[in-house]
Image (cartoon, rainbow, N blue to C red; front, side, top):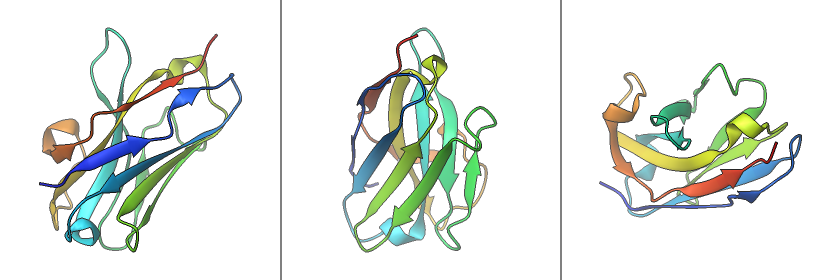
Length: 125
C-alpha cells in the first residue's frame, strides 16, 4: 500500500475550475494505476477518472468527460485532476486511490488498494 494525500479542494462558482493534487509515498508509484473517486452526501462513492501505470491511458466517467483531465507526474509521485466547467452536481468529497502494482483491470472502487482521506469540492447552485 501507499500513503496518499489530496489537496486543492475548495469552494468555486459554477463554471469555474479547480486542480486537485494527490501526492503518493514510496517507490512504487510509477508501477501503479491511479484513480479519482468522489462521494456526494447521501450517495455512494463513484468513479471519476483513472490513469494507467504503463502508457498513461486515461479513463473518465461520462459525467465528467470533456470537463475533467487526469494526469500524472512520476518524477513527483503525484497525480492531478484538472476540473473545468464545474457544476453544482460536482460537489463532493474527492478521493485519490492507488491500485495494486501492475494492475490493469477495471477501475472500480473495490479494486483500489489504497485511499487518501479526501478533499472537499463545493460548487454552489
